[in-house]
Image (tube, rainbow, N blue to C red; front, side, top):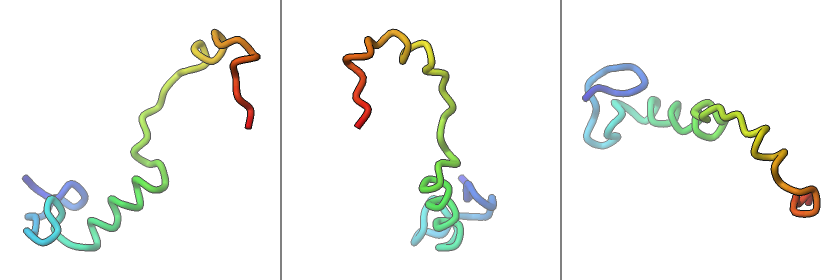
Amino acid sequence: MSCPICKKQPDAKYRPFCSKRCADIDLGKWLTGSYAIPADDSDDLESIPLADQKLH
């Protein structure tokens, strides 16, 4: 298995990454939402009665 960021050989210390730099890049992607899965939930929200929706 290669590093998911740069495709180099992984280092056991940072596995599955090759370095702290690649591990930090991956963490940054998680924190900024880059790995979010797009969803189309507009139909689901319309089926909830207005009294049940929490706005706060």
